[in-house]
Image (cartoon, rainbow, N blue to C red):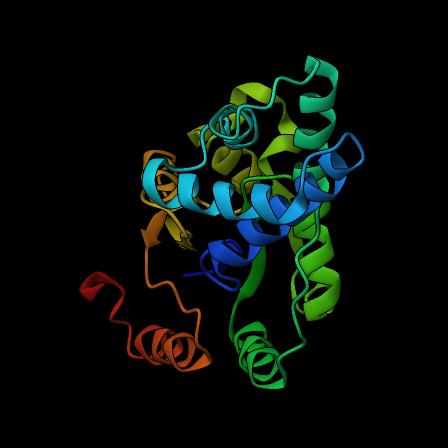
Length: 211
């Protein structure tokens, strides 16, 4: 294995952290037109848990019987997409990633939005320990949710055979897209540093096939 590529969402940072930040940003935007932040946040969290995130803002407003002009819904959706969750630097995580960096090429690939992911990279100080990073929304709408094209694009950028790249995916869809592009892929989800260290040990033992 020549390169290890990590997702961020649900891998290095929990998906819930991204979702909460997005809901807070949308609520703040909608507050300007009379939507109570607390009621919106509570209703959005309930809808997210029960039905997932599809059209979350528009459908949460429907649940609350708010009828707003479409432009305000779009603005709230854009605010949610651009929201950057607050995360703290993790010295143990950085140490583990630096160790990985000494043994293999290290990169990041995930679904957008780019603003949120770049914000997390900055807060976690990941730029210096990763060779390159790619967010699928940089490649156009047809790429996300994850398609094999994004992984093939990264393969060309790394100038490696696809079989020499291992992707740690945050979702099953991303894992399947990576595998369709010829990559090895696992869903170890090392949200805790201990799990990432476990992954390192497996790599050192050459036990990739055991995942």
